Length: 123
Image (cartoon, rainbow, N blue to C red; front, top):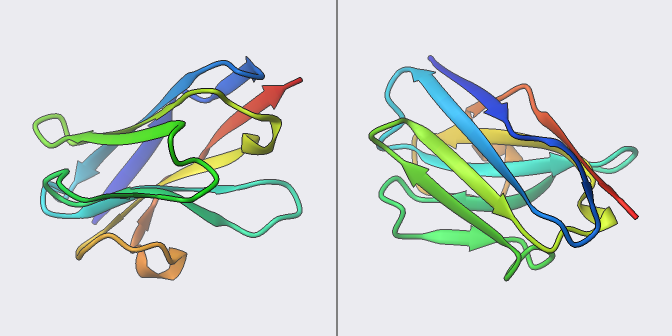
């Protein structure tokens, strides 16, 4: 079993930056793909970014490409999401995910989910 805990969410102004972190515990995730999804009020959960077990393969939603960067530290069992140039439409609950397999953009492919952290971008 894998337990994921997100941190780093909060309130930020348009154009600002936030860094989300996700700490994994339980079974080692060093060989798991990990990623981030988000869900805004009254909207479906959507893919944000994913990263392969060794960090060599990263993927981003078109809406965040060039602004967000996903990274991981297997020694610390953490994955991070650096978010720059934030927009009001980035406001959502952000979820950390993990799967025992290659990265994927579909939510149902991920076996483990954190509880989520709120990101609010104010204009």
